[in-house]
Image 1: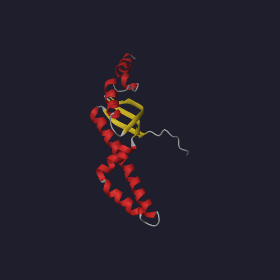
Image 2 (image 1 turned 90 degrees about the vertical axis):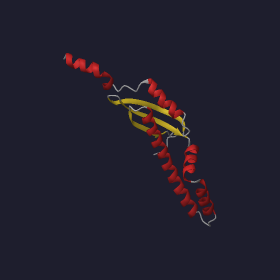
Image 3 (image 1 turned 60 degrees about the horizontal axis):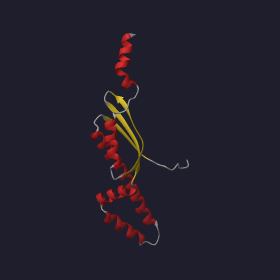
Image 4 (image 1 turned 180 degrees about the vertical axis):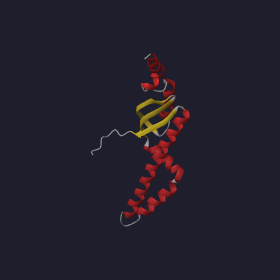
Length: 144
C-alpha cells in the first residue's frame, strides 16, 4: 500500500492532466497573438500527454485578408487577375465559376498551409509540445 501511495504522489502531475507551465503558455499565446494571420484566439488549452510532453489546442479566428495576401504573394497575383479578367469576357458564367471554384480550393489549401506553419512554429517554440491542434473558430452556428 505504501509503495502505491508513493507512486501516486510521485506521478500525480501526470495522472491529473496538468497543463504546461505558465511561462511556456504565455510564449505560445504571445506568438499566436502577434502572427498576422491570427485575428483572435479562443479556447486555448494544454494538457500532459506523457512525462514532459504536452498537447496544445486553440481555436483561431483567421484573418482571411492576410491568408489570401500570403497566398497571392507566393503564387502570383497577376496570373489570377488575368484568369478572372479573361473569364469575365465570356458570354456565360461557366468559365468564371470554374476560376472561382479553383481559387476557392487554393485558398482553403493556403489556410491549411498556414495552420501547418503555426503548428510547426509552436512545437519549435516549446519543444515539449508534441501535438498541436489548431481549429478555425466559427462564431456562427450553421444549420445542420
